[in-house]
Image 1 (spheres, one colour):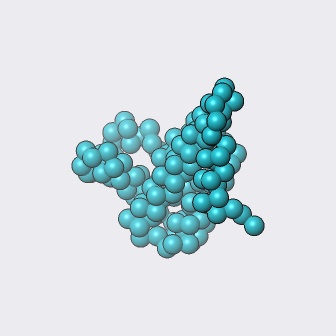
Image 2: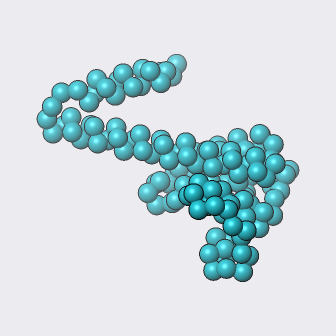
Length: 136
């Protein structure tokens, strides 16, 4: 039986109460854990939004999200940018689910979404730019 989210927050709150050096380390560890969880959630949101834009079925999107979590269960989030791992998962998974997408389609949607999220507005992807070649 897994604890509910409310139980986790109550446990964290009780673990962070008090003073001293050990409590400070606990608070920092909890804060770092929350940041890493937020990064995973962000990665899943990127996959969901890109999957909708690419008109993928929900099964393929969920499989890509699962691949993201599996990747980060073996690798550090500090070493690999969650945006690029999300894009890679969405590039690889649809082919195994019978709905392959071309690399330029996935990268074009990725660049569009990153521009929208950054607030810079969407610009058509230049397939001959150095940035696009680096993403490939």
